[in-house]
Length: 445
Image 1 (cartoon, rainbow, N blue to C red):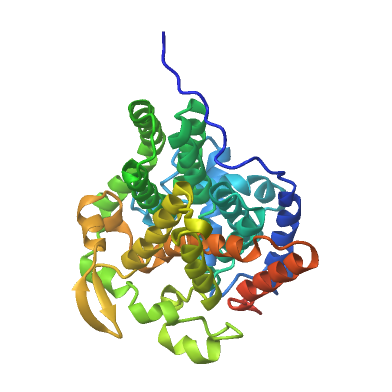
Image 2 (tube, helix red, strand yellow):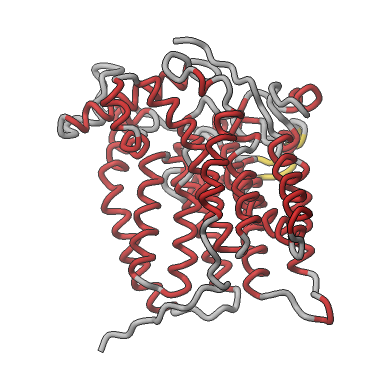
């Protein structure tokens, strides 16, 4: 008789999910406000400089056209003739193309499809991060605020012209189902984990690799955290899940390997070092940041080096650590699940920041120590092809959003009625205000 693991009841009592009915329109409205004036003219203008947006608009158009024709010769794009496999010279954006396929068919406007994806990325990133954080903290309010931190960060506004950097919205859902799978080892959770992991790789290979690191790090925490798991069943089904991911992604990965070998493409550590962050870049904002830009923009330009997380998220994360790790009233210890989650995601934030520094840790231009990114470069497939380690800051922001949500939960705990609404409003306004970046440049095309 085949052994099965019974589904464990949720760690926290199930609460109504009606909060999503409020969060989704809120994210949409905030996206339209913070992306002004792009949202008012998505047809014939692109965000920031036209280079990357127009390249990605062309990639989307090529993807949809080729998929509609049966996907034959998908990677042999009509660029850099006569070289083969030229779609693999950049991100292929297949997952994103599937999302806007109807829009491209109806409008035949790749610029509109590109801008629609940019706007959707803010809504979906905030929503999926909130779903993950709601599962981890049990608080819809904290989840909503954490979603704002992840979606409307300085890092994302600085990269509004880089579609493949914005479309990391499936990472939180993959992690959500990873947590669920570790709890009960059910096939359903594994299937969703595989689906969102594959879709993330197809949408953005950058974020797919970041997901690998985040999932591996959190798995280590679960393994050493002392919580009982059905590890033998998890291992067997997990291996099958990995094989399923590999089977789906192998043709895409093979296209990249063949194209790069044929063209002799490779990235040296010196090239990667040039696009790594300096510690001072975590204080840098874009010049368009209305609050800090006049003072902090000089610490890190261009977009790759504007990594300021905000003072309020950092303060909330510190409060979250205190509320979870400090013994509670009457000597009651903190909940082990809360402690494990906070330590896991807090350390993940630090890991993301450390990897963003690249192969050499620098402070003010001075090299002080080798960085762990070198290990990824040499020993983990895919990382030698990434040009910009500083984009690992997205992992830092996600870990920060989760830990800050614990602080928001502690701050709003026990508040009711107008007092609670006022505190939540002020927190939300503060989180958005620190990163407000409008109007966005939108050169016509």
